[in-house]
Every structure is written in C-alpha cells, then in structure tokens.
Length: 373
Figure (tube, rainbow, N blue to C red):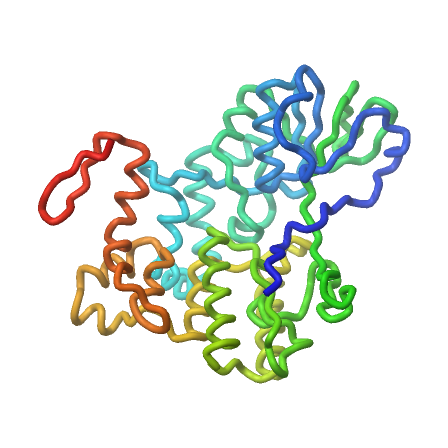
C-alpha cells in the first residue's frame, strides 16, 4: 500500500520573463509555515486555490500589502453554510448525490452561483471566473472577501514579467518594491519509490489507476495499491479509510475486481467526465466528489447502506442516512466488517459537530441528560 497521497513535489511554473533579475525572494507554499518573517513586506501570492487563499489572508494581517494573483478567478465557498452548518455536512449526503445525478448540471451550477453571490458578489470583488461554480476544484475561504474589502488583499491578473524590484501584470498594472513572491501553484506526484517510477508512470499528473487506486500495470494480480491519490470535494480521511478497506477485501478476503479491460474503460470514462466538467488544468486529473466516490468504493465490497431494508425496518435511521451527512459510519451498517456502534454514531453526528461550539449543550443518553464539561 503506497500511502503517498498527491502533495509530493511542489510544482514550480516555467520562469516568467525577467524573473532571473528579480532581487526579492520566491518560495513555494510548501515551504510556508506561518506569517513570521513577512512583517511589513509587500508580498505577491500566486494562485487562488485553498493554499493561496489561506496564505493571502494570514499574511494580510502582518504584511504591508498582499497581492493575490489569479489567472481565472474562482468561486469561493465558505466553510460554514447557512445557520453555521459545516458546508461538507450540508452538501455531502445521499440526497444531494441523488440531486446532482438528476438535475441538469447547468441548473446545479446556476443555483450554486446564486448562493455564492448572495454572500458576496464575485464580480465586484474581482474573483468571478468564466467557468461555472463546479467547473473547477472549489476554493474554501471564509475571510478572503473581508480582506479584499479592507484593501489588505488586492486581486491581480496573471503575471506578465519581472524586473529587479517590481512585477508587471497582464492588465498593464505594476507593483513596485515587491519583497516576496509566494507560489501557491500546487503539486506534482510520482511513484519513483517503486521501480524508479517505471511501473506506475505519471505524465502531467495523469496515471492509469482503476478508481485512482489500482495501477493497470499490476492488474493481473492487484497486489499493489495507492492510497490518497484523489482530490475530493470533501474530506480525504474517510475516503482513504474506504480505499484501504477495498484493498484489504480484495487482497486478503478474495473479493474479485474487474479485469484489465474493464478497469481501463473506467479510467477512460473518468477522464472524459472530468474533461467535460472541469476547466483544463493539471490539478483536475484526480478529482472526485466525496459521496459519489465513497459509494463507488462501497459497491466494490458490498458495504453501501441497504436503504430498502432501512426504510422498512428503521425509517427514522433511514431518513438520517439519506438526508444527513454521508459520514463513514453509514458504510459500517452492513457488509464486511460492519460495526454494531455505527447506528449510534450516525445519530450522534449532529451533537458531535455542534458540541464544541456550545458548552451548554446537553446530551441525551438513555433518557437522562448529562452536562458535558
């Protein structure tokens, strides 16, 4: 099991014209630890992914000025949705999965863009991209609009060229006396650990792996698997656990996987789907939607919740499983390695999400109320 993930090698773009003359410091966000050392400096952050947005916000509290460079712009999602609900708990559910598979994509994107613009108008803030809301990996950031409104972060288009102390952008504007450039430009991955990279070959962040796990090069026996080679819209930890379950069920428990031709067809289908949905980018090669992908893996080992039985025998639990967040416990209700505590864990999800925010909350246990100190 290669648990290497995909944040392996910092990706450094090709040099911009004049970059060799620049006297300031250029680093990748991989090297960034905190804001210390950036006090009272003019900083240019390149890239509007999650790392770029977070770095720009944090640096804006201590730096003299922060400029955030984005070629395309981005739709910015809050971590918290309406009424303070964590956004992944709201949108990663079986019900939302059904809606996304049923409602035409343009209508889904229109609704997302409407909701996001209610929070702040992306065009006014210089962030509105040409692609639809779900046409790129989403950017999660709660503070960025506030920092832009305060002027401590200023949005700029792509870099055109460098001089010794300044940067010119594609709109013709120039920022003088730049001290630091922070490249939040993503990562590349490889598998040089195994046979010098000749077994699992990677080309521009593309590799042939069934369900982003099983390399086609070893599809005759499937004794090798990659864990964490996915960029999910949602949490990666439950997915990695599910990937490990799938591997052990096939390797140790003898569950059969499709043959090589079927695996290759699945790899190609996923690439075609990504090319239709996402803007072309090296970051959009291993994208997955959390709930859909979890259910794909669950299908392989037969651990998806049996909704028919649940609706008949435990309708309230079925309601919670279907409309509530797609937590990993729902994949422990039945199938291999089911867990007798899964049902209680599902019922407790809302409490455990809310309890850290309010020490007055009480937990009901066996009809009695307990104060949690």
